[in-house]
Image (spheres, rainbow, N blue to C red):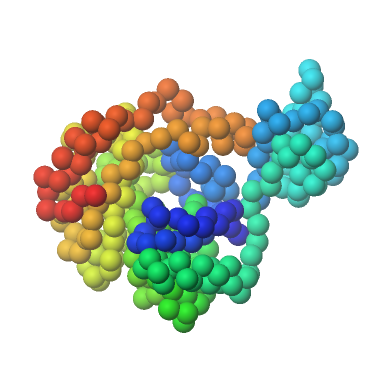
Length: 294
C-alpha cells in the first residue's frame, strides 16, 4: 500500500532519486506534513474549494456517508470505507482517494524506468512514508529487487519497529535516513504517541554495525527547538560509533491544508516556522559536537 511516487527527488538521499511513499505509520507526530500517510488504508481527501455542489457523490456513495447541509456537502468519515465511488463521479475533482495497492513487480518496473537518471547522478530509490518498516515483507522484496538490479537504496524511517525487521532488511540498504525527534521519552510520547525507547535502541544497533546513517532532526518551535534539547541531541548523536551526518530540518506548514482535506484538526495551528537565523544557530549548536552537520 503506497500513496505517492515522487520522481526527480533531490532531498531524499544522494543524486537524483525516485521516492516511494508507503502508507501507514505508527507515529502521530503533531507536525506531520503527510497526514494522509498515517492510516494503513485508502483515505478520502476533499477539496471544498473545488466542489460545485452537483450532488453526484451523494447518490454514488454506497454507505450513505455523504449528505447536503446548508449548501455544503458533508462526509461522515466514520461511515466512509474508502471505496472511491464518490471520487469516480466527481467531475470537479474535489474528491481524491489517497492510497493504492501495488505489486512488487509493478513498482520495480516503475523504479527502473528512471535508471538513466540514477546512473548519471549517483542516485537511486528512497523508500519513505508513512513508515516503510510497517510493511516489512513488501519492503524486503523491493530492496532485494533493487540490489539485483544494482540500484542504490535508501530507507527513510522513524525507527519505531522490532529489531527483527531491521535485521531482515539492513543488508540490502545502502543508506538509512533516520528521524530523531526528542530524547525525552515523556515529551516524545506526548508529541508522537509512542515511546522513543525502540527508536534509540535500533539507531544505536544500526550504528554499532557500521551502517551508513544520516540523522534527521525536525526543528519544531515549542517542541524540541530549545538549546538544551538540541545539545542533548547533539551529544547523543556524537556518542554513536558510526554516523555520516546530522540534518536539522526546519518545521514548515505544508501539511496544514492536508489536515483540512482529511477533516482532521491540525494541532500546531499557531506555530510559526523558525527563521533562517534560528536555523543557523541550530546548526551552530549541533556543530559543537563531534558530528557533521549539513
